[in-house]
Length: 424
Ligand SMILES: *C1O[C@H](CO)[C@@H](O)[C@H](O)[C@H]1NC(C)=O
Ligand SMILES: *[C@@H]1O[C@H](CO)[C@@H](O)[C@H](O)[C@H]1NC(C)=O
Image 1 (spheres, rainbow, N blue to C red):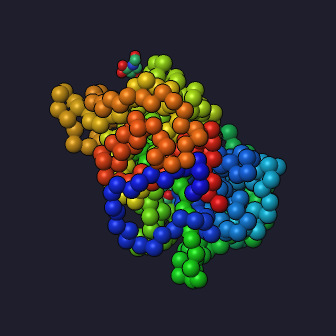
Image 2: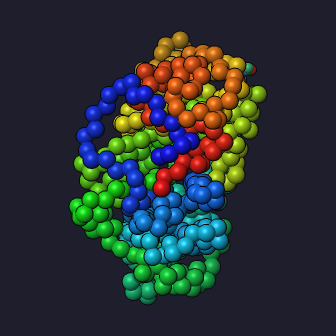
């Protein structure tokens, strides 16, 4: 990781249990689907990734989409096409796809839309899903009638039969669902041919990567800890595990192989879509963070809601993930604020909560206690070391380290923002 990150002194010592996998030779994607997105800037070209691991840009790395990912094939090829127009080359030679990954069909996407509509009608509230069919596809997976990549690339007539059963199941459940089964089958037949050379036994692939000649492996996940199906702000979550345990289940690798875990945390807090957000600043402060931080979702372009850094929430994410260190991004977005706050305790009816609550009704009514910091009111953009940072910014960072008992190892400042992290 090179600038815009600057190294800060490590105040705390953490014990690393395992070898370290940071730099990327094999870049692997372990969960989620094309509902989430990352913008990655390499040599000042902006690439958008949803399904492809961003490591596919690295000509020296093999990229791998794991079994935990659900794949919409038209989406995958479109994404590759768009990024190819920007300069991505030879991706088909460097991408492997797990034969155990589940497939998102067009009707899953249609069902996603219908379900959102129904939720809106029944409870007056939707989940703010991206309607990419991710939830319904994971439902099929859990209901054990989903179809996987290995089904698509073997005998097509067997696949076709199973596909018709699955589609029929959704048609019975949602009479308003309009699906052109034959057209989709035709399309899938074409994709099967393009996919076949990329498909591999994912477990064996990862096993060889971990046990063969020494390699550095970078695992990329989608979404964030608070959108995890188990640990997130349920039901306003995504359908997969976004926390570190998903690395093992989403790839088929033993936990003993997981090395350092880096938490990437913004210097303030944002949320895209609906759901409780205790430190949200629904006023000028939030607007300032939103516009200075250019906070728009990559997949939907929705404005992200913004608020003060919530350390109750970050500490909770740390309990689940066990961060070895933290990369604190977008610190410079706070440059103009005369006063900055950090949420440190939640209280309900005057009583402090020990940790982050499971129940959304509780989360909606928590009162946040803040620690207030003087702002630094100057630009941190050119700063390249911890010592060069204004003392107020240093205090802000040190407070975070002390509170979490995790070293903040990198800080993002400067025009380049988090999207400019140069990984390769
Ligand atoms: C957890 O995540 C993995 C990988 O993303 C996925 O295969 C599995 O279905 C998820 N489990 C649950 C209960 O969501
Ligand atoms: C901004 O809004 C939040 C709630 O969204 C409120 O708690 C806070 O006091 C407001 N700040 C100002 C300066 O009005």
